[in-house]
Image 1 (cartoon, rainbow over the protein chains, first blue to last red):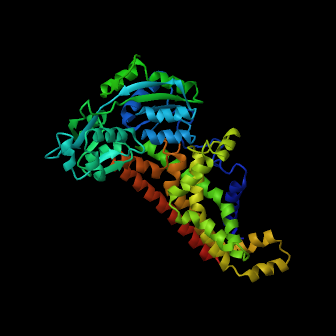
Image 2: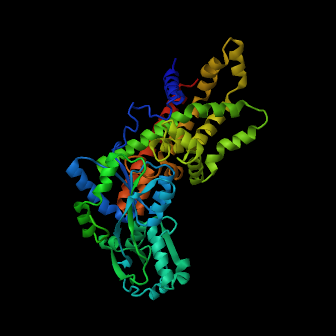
Image 3: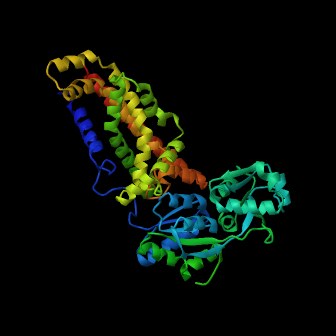
Length: 265
Length: 224
């Protein structure tokens, strides 16, 4: 019968769909055949820590032979994902607020969180910009200003606090371009799609395509605290990386990238 | 690039295949039901099944997250039974399956509607059980539509984004499909990397549609 191959193929697919383990990939007994690092602990971290944590994770793997899976984003967003059940073992947030929401949900113990780092806010403009604002007052003349969305990223909240205290938020509010996270705000200025952005000093230092116009004055800027937390249910390997964040090697990486270290080793 | 990107491609194809396999039986059953059933509630059912087609994918993702999140009753119950779905590959399969389902149903249903019910009746009078009549008359006659729907569903699954990112997150090496990776690269301002991946996606989609067309043509040539 000429039609048989098609019917056989359909029947095969059908049996895969009907089996009680329909959500298990039929290609192999091993689920997620093509996914990497299945047993590695998952680390969620603020987007501004991308380079630092990649460096620390690489060194950690080179030294111990154990890898971690890193995922970056806006801290508020990541905290919500953890609340919804994302299987993260370690969370490094760019603010205390996101970690506190997890504490209230019983997902972080007060004894298993540490204030890790601090940072500063700067205004960046494209490297090629002919004129740049020099003070917070001059921001008012910009056509738009990119900041990470205050709804999902602490840097957006910090920037809003700073601009509010400096008395320019109300004038600027309509021209704010919210981005997914701080790296997206930086990328918007790198590609000159936004004339300026408020980012962390550490992000600005990494890019050759932007320059720092000015830094937020310390008396106006909110205090920035990065908090590392161990998530309930994390295994020994997650705990190990949590400790690694305070190691001398990690602190050297943070320092080299321009972060300010908090607390003792 | 290379190895990591190839792994993402393979993972994306794997997820799309599993999602397509998962929707095939319920999709064909739903299509047959819509094609044959004429009782009350028919258009309500039709509308309900087509909903993922018109809703923003993010709305579908949110609904799934609300249903299956670790702190929701169903999600918690599944969790205590060792089935964690959100932010794992299972969530990728679920999101893409839900989004692809109506595409299969719509195509297959039209095909079933085109099958002359008298032929099915004839088979029944000749002693076929309803199941045998379906597998020996209805399905072979409607196979082109079913196949086209399956391919459409697969193609949709390959590129699903909105629902996936909400229920599965965007975790490299775990839930990150091509569409999610492109998004990540664009957000980070790595446009060239994003363009490479977009090219890969286009090649993949082309391959899927092209081979479907080939299969369809061969089936047509063989048809009486």
